[in-house]
Amino acid sequence: MKRLALLGLIGLALVACGKKGPPVAPERRVPATVSVLSASIEGKAIHLEWANPTSRVDGSRMKDLTALRVYRREEAGQGEIKPAILSWGKVVGYDEISTIRMANPAPAQVEGGKVRWKDALGLRFGQRYVYVVVASDSIGRSSAPSERLAVTFRAAPLPPRDLRATPGEQEARLAWSPPTGLIDGGALPPGITYQLFRSEGKDAPFQIITATPIVATVFTDSGLRNEQTYYYAVRAVRGEAPGAARSEPSAIAAVTPVDLTPPSPPKNLVAIPSEGAVRLAWDPSPEEDVAGYLVYRTGPGEGEAQKLTPSPIPHTIYTDRSVALGTTYRYAVTAVDRAARPNESAQSSPATATVP
Image 1 (cartoon, rainbow, N blue to C red):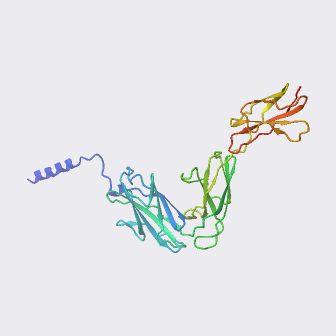
Image 2 (spheres, rainbow, N blue to C red):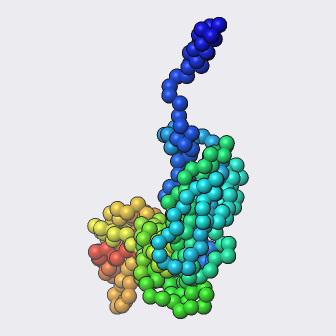
């Protein structure tokens, strides 16, 4: 009987070994850590941003990311940062200040695999805040804490003042005045830099056009489209990442770049006199935006040329019938473009004719 019982146990063991590979250790199935944790100070809040894990520790795809827990530690000193160790579902020595549910992440903002979240919970200027983020799956398995990120909470500058935008040829020339101080009433420290934003419509989102903050309080934004209105704002930046303190945006300034380049002057102007008239002809200017031509005439004893065509004519021929017999006239032609503020070319080489 003992022998039969032993054979039965061996048979059960053989049946149970039907898996297609070695078992995975539980610690290898937890989510990978949150990565690329960064921060900035905007006004009276610290804005955190990070990349969600897309896989587990064993390399398998992460399909059920459920929650993200944000932990914070407040420190007065500038010494070593306390380690972040996960124990019994908590990070030892850190306070859990937010749980972001992926099914309904508000007030956090999730775009693709990036998360942006704002911390405004009892922050005090001059304190150092250390953050870590932990990811959890649908059955509660937690990742290891992310890399620690230490941010010294500094008062941000007030917004820059008097933003001005001047139009140019396919460009906008911007200038502004520095902030008057910091939001806590302190004086503006040295080393303030600026970030410029641009929008292509009143309701369109603003995009940063200075990837690296600039020191100057002037900037020329080039490569724009003429006759298109652009909207600009600027903000001041104190310090560098991590934890650069950024002001609120300035008031918005709008500008419409303008075409300031006139067409080329018409060429090969000829004047052919006949009884009671002078017929003019010329070669067109090569620019595509030419709207028409203006004809000028100077008669005997006249100091300034008289404009014979009050508005541009679309043709490259013209007949002057307001002439006197036996009189010599001097003619010139200019080209005018279609810009909102039309540009007029220089005058063509002159042509003269004496009416027979």
